[in-house]
Image 1 (cartoon, rainbow, N blue to C red):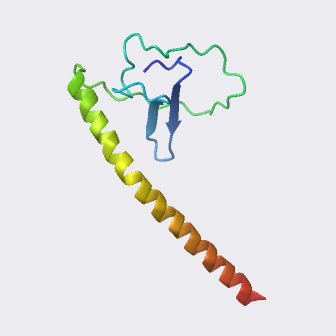
Image 2: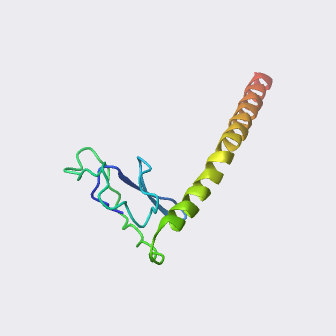
Length: 112
């Protein structure tokens, strides 16, 4: 990935796992490669207003063998699986939030 591109983002989670991706979803072989001659590549000129952490980002894992259409297809199908289940997961989380909020409201009513 071209880390100097304005569309590159990186997130490091508390588990130590790092996600590196193109916010435009134009890198089918992310997190290893951007497309050669990407039409949306723009070099980042400044980091104005950005907050930089004090921790060092973990090194990228080794790049898999030579890329090709089959790699992009595999990663695309994995993304499709995630996109298919995401609405259901979000619905479950929202329902749990509503249940939790109702339970908290009942507790406050009893307390008075």
